[in-house]
Image (cartoon, rainbow, N blue to C red; front, side, top):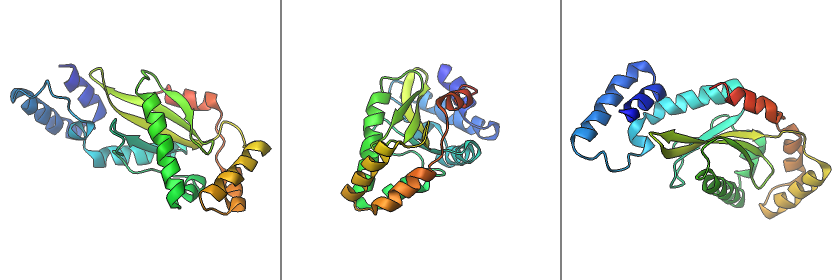
Length: 192
């Protein structure tokens, strides 16, 4: 069964047997025609731990969203820039609106892509596909392929006012945002 082999590759070995048993039992109950959510396939705490280590090692932030827009995991290793934006109600709304829009685009993806949020932050967006079905989308991001341009910094100052932030503070954090060239991101992510 393809689902089982995919599941084994997702889960660490010591947890795979339990997971396989659960999936097989669902199948034996005649429910295999029903879509199985990623929450049912994986131990979210283990996925969170793997995501945390990945984000720390690679130096990016990461989060996984389900197709319905709910987060499967918490943000790992967020940048100060993005944490500052999400510190206000309007900033959080716009941030999650960006993730919603990226998720809509990601539904059509069969391969990873780099997308940008409303505040010009780059995010590597990759569909998580199990047995041919998209179960979630992984985001690794909060970086820039190059430093913010003077025009983008001016635009960020306008955005800061709109989301109730100090424009100089947001511009300062934007200048500190990690710069990672696209080719480095692709090289790292193609190694998986």
